[in-house]
Length: 148
Length: 148
DNA sequence: TATAATTAGATTGTGCACAACTTAATTGCC
DNA sequence: GGCAATTAAGTTGTGCACAATCTAATTATA
Image (tube, rainbow over all chains, first blue to last red; front, side, top):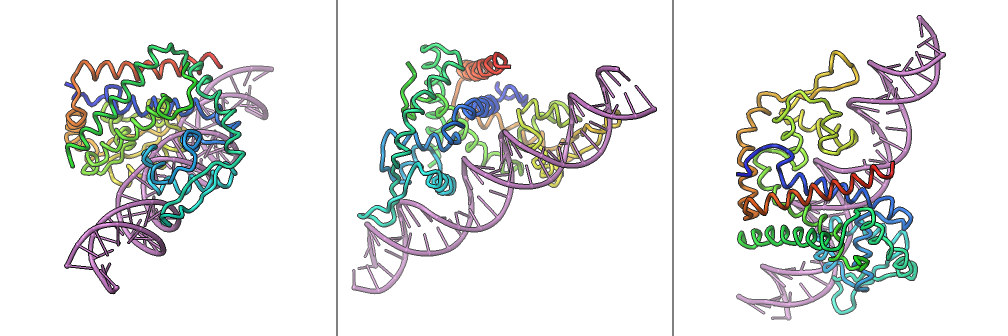
């Protein structure tokens, strides 16, 4: 079972292309906000919880400092966020929204609606798909923990 | 509905992290074959259909020449494939397996088994998940075509 | 209380992923 | 047949994604 080497029968391939194609859908929607897809994810976290430290941010997005450091640098250049060193622990860096970064949230509110409109998907299906993806991740993590 | 801006409620985020985490699972499995994940996908296509041209390969994987050209260059350097210009149309480039690239298939046969073992997933669930991912792509493409 | 181990973040190097552009071959159309 | 439009690959530039390494701050412990 599942041992066929055919491209289309690999769940990895379906997941990989689905992710790429969905990201492609976001590009024109995010362009007016001056954000890439990954930058948008960082902003989503900040709108939810301002003044988060980079460590937590990386854990939320499963991104390491090698990815996050230059990404955050670009968000600072655009002027949406700023870095503040934590006073209690000088190693930590807190990320906070600038007024322009906060203001952007209003425009971003429309993004999920546009996307689900484009996907043309009903609530029940949407939820089922979300659960599937979360389950795949749970299985991956269960394996990771088994290995430790 | 679906208008919450919370990270975890975005299907894009779940798809993006699931794909990244699954790819991460493949890395140690593919390392002994001397392949990255994307290179593995190219090899899958070649084992299925040798002597394919780059255009078709790119369509199969939804990758453009900007990604594929350097990727193929690396596969040639490793010695798994070679490029041959098509005689009937000098623009086309055909990709074919070297003996070492063909031989690799035997080792690769074990990859899907290892992965489904790690995912610890039964056949029915696996198939259901595949169908969901294919459906997501179909919806994305349906939108793309509507826009043309 | 020195110093070893750990931790947070940054840097470097490799490999995608894709847009925009270039080059060369082919096809269409007159 | 001649020339514009199209097509296939390749190149360049930007931005992830991640491993490996480095630096500086903190914590643990001998």
